[in-house]
Length: 115
Image (cartoon, rainbow, N blue to C red; front, top):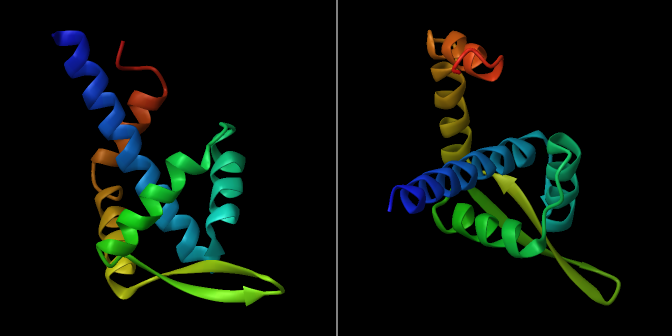
């Protein structure tokens, strides 16, 4: 039972960090889903399948943090995402959070001082 709870916590944490990373990536410039996947891979050095990223994009759009617009490119349509004011506000609040002592605690954790 403890193992299942640990897996659930870890999975939720990764999903939430991924949502925040996607929001940040899109805030830097308009992005297609494919370009978000490629940027996630670049900044994390991990492989991401579309089945992981697209549901997170849909959830962020559904909650109003990003907006998508379909663009015709030749015979194909591609959806491009922009961050909304609500999304910018969330990024600002998260940035402010990391200006507090949490920044130092997180740095200690990342440096392995949690063991």
